[in-house]
Amino acid sequence: MLRTRLRLVARTHVSGAQAPAEIKAILLDIEGTTTPIRFVYDVLFPYARTHLGQHIEQHASSPDYERLFDALREEHASDVAAGGSVPGSWVDAPRASRLASVAAYCSWLMDRDRKSTMLKALQGKVWEAGYISGELVGEVFPDVPAAFERWHVRRLPVGIFSSGSVLAQQLLFRYSSAGDLSGFVDWYFDTAIGAKIESVSYRRIAESIEIGTDRVLFVSDATRELDAARTAGMHTRLAVRPGNLSSHEGGFPVIHTFDEIA
Ligand SMILES: [Mg+2]
Image (cartoon, rainbow, N blue to C red; front, top):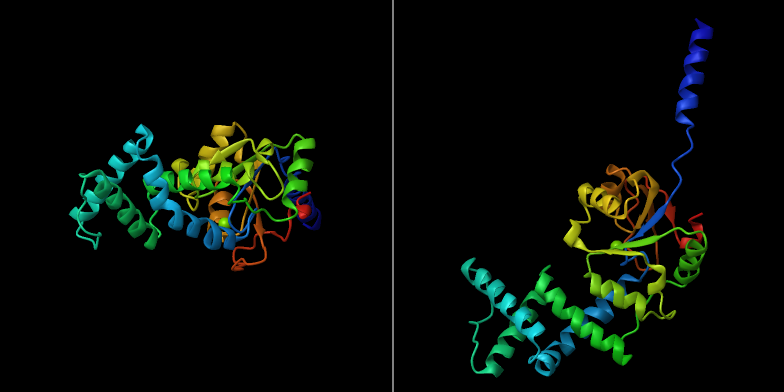
């Protein structure tokens, strides 16, 4: 009887002690993970709000922007149909009224923190101009550049998964406070692949980078995101950074800097 139990324990022990699958890729959130949350709320969003009107006036003649404005007009129409408190009516002519309609509607969307794809596209263009002019500099935590280099040397590819648009993500790392870090980032994903709190998004990312979920380490400050990634089979770390709202629910291993990621 005792022997049987020992054997059972031994067998259980062996299967439980299987080495965890080797990590083949690192997937990172931005806000609260690579970058202080306040950079997004105190720098990026106010910058877009302040410069949007002037920016659309300067670029309104480009066909790119025309397409964006048309898409915003459609979005405005569906908001009107839904009976919300949408600002005024959309006016296309004269041109100045059309631009004013775009600006007023964008401002209304920003007030509501609406996840509008068209608004994000327009904000991305405003930020791009700001980064290029040097008015904006992408902020990363001090340990981030060294970690990128370390992972690069170890041939560990790095992906980003953030609710900001891919363009906004690329700009932040291209024009970062530590110089151009874009060479260290292999993949960018935004919510076009799925919501950050849905496990299917993490499975799609793994498929897209052709690495099994059990070989990816996802780092985020949001336990709901970590929960979704863990459900998909990814390894997880909870980033506890200055300025984060720390919730430690879920029992995720905690890191304070990327130096702690072996
Ligand atoms: Mg975050």
